[in-house]
Amino acid sequence: MYKRILVANRGEIALRIIRACRELGIETVAVFSEADRGASYVELADEAYCIGPAKSAQSYLKVDQVISAAEVGNVEAIHPGYGFLSENSHFNEVCRSCKIDFIGPSPEAMDLLGDKNRARSMARDAGVPIVPGSDGLIENEEMATQVAHGIGFPVLIKATAGGGGKGMRVASNDLALKSALAQARAEAGAAFGNAGVYIEKYIERPRHIEVQVLADHHGNAVHLWERDCSTQRRHQKLIEESPAPNLPAETRSELCESAVRLIRSAGYTNAGTVEFIVDQDNRFYFIEVNARIQVEHPVTEMVTGIDLIKQQILIASGERLPFPQSDIEQRGCAIECRINAEDPDRRFQPGPGTIRRMMFPGGMGVRFDTHVFPGYTVPPHYDSMIGKLIVHQPTRGEAIACMIRALDELRIEGIPTTAPFHKRVLRHTDFVGGWIDTKFVERTFTGGD
Ligand code: MV4
Image (cartoon, rainbow, N blue to C red; front, side, top):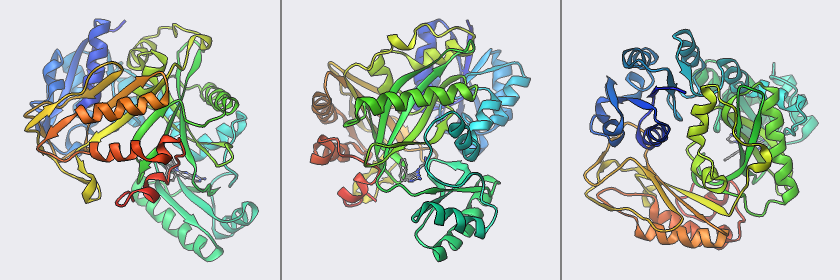
């Protein structure tokens, strides 16, 4: 087991990783930008190094600076958290050449699945359902037209280097297809340095359901059931839950087993998420793999009782998974609300600033993962998430009631937050009925688009 780990991240996830290390008896080294000097995670780490100015591009994204801190701090491994360098295979390779374990998949698995078109053909070969579409990358307009006529409009053009909704274009006819193709190519080339695109049938009003997986270095791979992340706005998730409501048991099993088949065939190790969309008739299709721990991982931790960060560390250090698939239960219902420093009445405009006064929610089945405290100033340089409120209850109805109660207890003064918006969503009949899809927020709430 490791003696010392560097946490290459900030905010609540840095704190979450430090907590797991503490319980495992592992020392931690934090890194921070000039804007994060007084952060709680910096105080709670055993050692901390400043790696640059406030801007992410000059600090948390600087491979050299992070590696230097790891060398000086004399760590055996780096946990990248989510965002920043977490899915950067170059960073992953640099860690390897410096003989520092990257707590995540190998650079090879990361590259393979990071290319969405390759991941798509890998899924097809593993017998995992994919959305009808092109057989590979689109070479020219004629090929795009041929594929579109084969599957029927509307179609969706996706960047192979994209993901998370970046570089996608819908087209509903031949003329629109030609301009969408040119736009998607240009956008992908500029954003990712890779203009490769592929085409899929556009699925209307899908649900976003993802499967958490863990795989060790001894050939063991398991799933930890699914999360429904359909309650989102402009590709930013707002609420995540497990189990997915109104999902037939048979679909759930097939979905989860598909995810494990894909992960095995890709030689993927550590924690990962296999993302699917599910249509109105409960047919599911593979979309992409997220090769990192995700923001919403606590939802899975609550229903399974498994600490995913500890498992990531244990797997990276060469341990075997300590449980077979048959021991992983999905017990009760967990819901997470992302608390962002944004004003829901001003189109979710970020509102950084100082928290004058705050009260934390608590009680049975309530977990609040946050790095903020009264007097803390939310810097304007990073993502606006300031905490995650997670509840776990026997049933979905009880989880919704518990979340509303916890949101009522949560008081944050001095900055706007998304907490009031969550209460409106949780009380809406469509949410209560579990009739959610990726368009639910946009069509239901003004300012939701
Ligand atoms: C789709 C789709 C409809 N049809 N693919 C967006 C993020 C990326 N991970 C995949 N996405 C989608 N792919 C086909 N063929 C609709 C979406 C989509 C979406 C997916 C998950 C969560 C939120 C979403 C919001 C809009 C569109």
